[in-house]
Image (cartoon, rainbow, N blue to C red; front, top):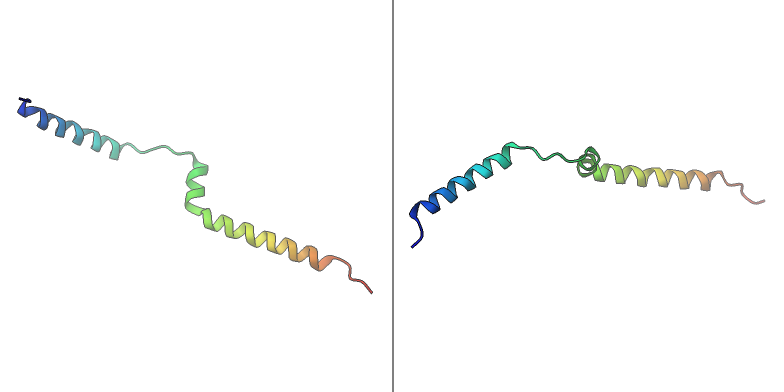
Length: 65
C-alpha cells in the first residue's frame, strides 16, 4: 500500500514548482517580443510602403504621345 504522505508531499512539491515558474520570468529575445506585440502594425506598414512605391513608380513613368 502506498505511503499516505506520498500524495501530500507530491502536492507540496507541485505547488512549490508552480510558484517558482510563476515568479521566474521567461527571457525571450527582444525581436520576438516586438514581433509578437506589433506584428500587424509592421505588416500593415510594409503593405502601405509597397503600395506607395508602386504608385510612385507607375506615376513617374513617361507617357506615350
